[in-house]
View 1 (cartoon, rainbow, N blue to C red):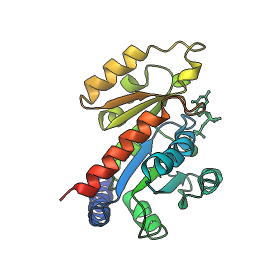
View 2 (view 1 turned 90 degrees about the vertical axis):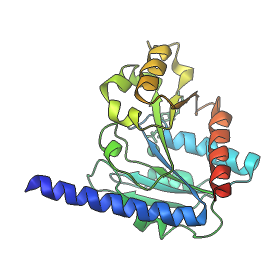
View 3 (view 1 turned 30 degrees about the vertical axis):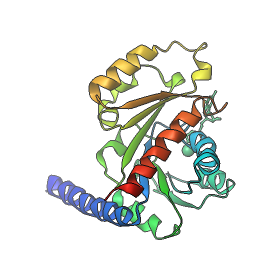
View 4 (view 1 turned 135 degrees about the vertical axis):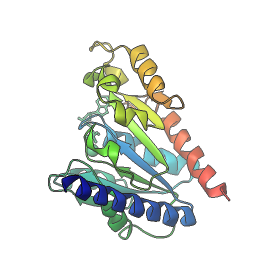
Length: 222
Ligand SMILES: Nc1nc2c(ncn2[C@@H]2O[C@H](COP(=O)(O)OP(=O)(O)O)[C@@H](O)[C@H]2O)c(=O)[nH]1
Ligand SMILES: [Mg+2]
């Protein structure tokens, strides 16, 4: 019985995610699902990257913030002048497609080139839920340790891009970057790995350019 219930929820999720993909496909808006453990730097990456996308590439973003409670991250994004919807899952450790579909109704239907969904901080639960995104970006920060891709393979396996954040702390923490590169490439051979320090801005342009290229590619898709 329990298994049937789980299957029906997942089937529903897949259907809703497909609908979102269709909607954003018609609008030619790129959707990005950003995942990491709590504190890896997702919001800081957005605070740096969204202004860069606007200034360098003329691209406008909207953001969906997923948190268990609170609106701190939503307020951080709002301060950038970027349209944002804050979701509270009240205990759930991931966003699902129905939450994202509801949040989309509160973002402008016109004028956005991309939508970034900041998932609930967790390296396990978000891996199982398609939100209708085009790109999955996983952020791993140096202080979390270089063993995370081997210990939480599911999320790294589905990553289109891996951001290794907080490289400014590399001298203080034992972290073998080569190990992370090797394991994540074994899990996801096509993954694009970028190293950055969102706090200082180092490497942010490369990630911004990567998103800009994907957003332009979606616009030109027939
Ligand atoms: N040293 C350092 N700290 C960072 C960097 N990026 C984010 N942080 C800090 O890490 C903490 C968590 O960042 P936040 O963006 O809120 O992470 P999130 O929970 O993944 O959204 C904050 O104190 C940030 O200032 C970085 O590149 N270097
Ligand atoms: Mg955050």
